[in-house]
Image 1 (cartoon, rainbow, N blue to C red):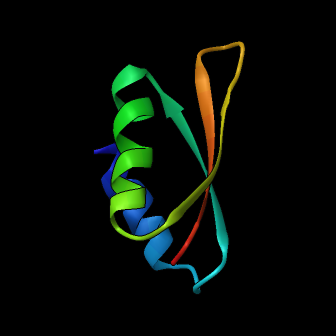
Image 2 (tube, helix red, strand yellow):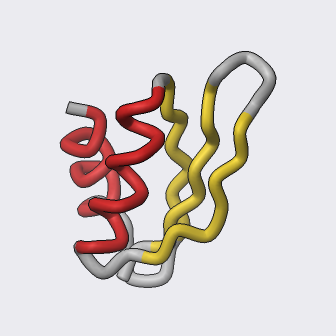
Amino acid sequence: MTFVRTRLALDQLRSGQILQVLLKGDEPRRNVPRTATEQGHTVLALLDEADGITRMLVRRK
């Protein structure tokens, strides 16, 4: 479900724009960046925060 929300947000952006996504848990941390990359987007950063949240920056293709 997390990637569905991420994809909907990416669809609202123009090519080259950057989206920040907050991920909670191991499964989204593994799957969302992988799926974004498979769809041609560029993951710029994965920053693990102290509170267990991962901040992902992704550039739309």
